[in-house]
Image 1: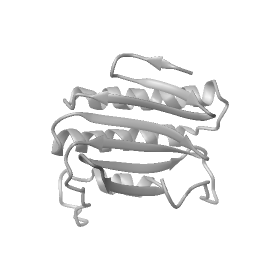
Image 2: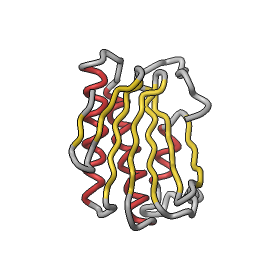
Image 3: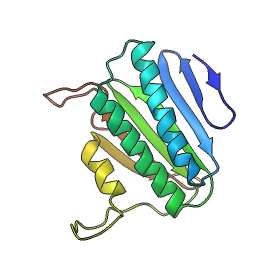
Image 4: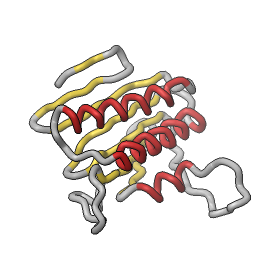
Length: 159
C-alpha cells in the first residue's frame, strides 16, 4: 500500500511492515492532521489487513500522537516528523523534532494546569523511549493494538 499526499502523509507496506509517516512544518494545525493520520492508518490496518485494532487502541494512539506532536510544536519550534509502524501486536508512535533537549515528566501535582502530556503518554503506553538524534530527538511510545486482559504484547520491553 503506497499513498502520498505531499508532506501530509505517506503509507507503506514493505516486506510485510505496515507504516505511515508525515512531515509537518510545526505549526499548531499539524496536531489535528497527525491525529487524523493515526486514525486513518489504524482504520486501514484493521479493515484492509485484518489486524485486531480495538477502539481503545485507536483512541489511545490518537491521544499519544496528539500529546507528542503538541509537545514538539510547543517546545521545539520547527519541523516535526510523525512515524507510525505496526510492530508485533502494537503500534509504535515515533515523533521527531529538531530540539535536542529531552523531555522530562513534571512531578505529580493535581493542582497543575497543563504539562500533563508526557504523564498521559507514560500512563497509556506499554513502552516509552526518548533518544537524541544527530539533529534533535525522537520520542517513541508503544501501544497495544488489541485489548488483552493479561496485558502482554509482543515487543513490550522496547519500542
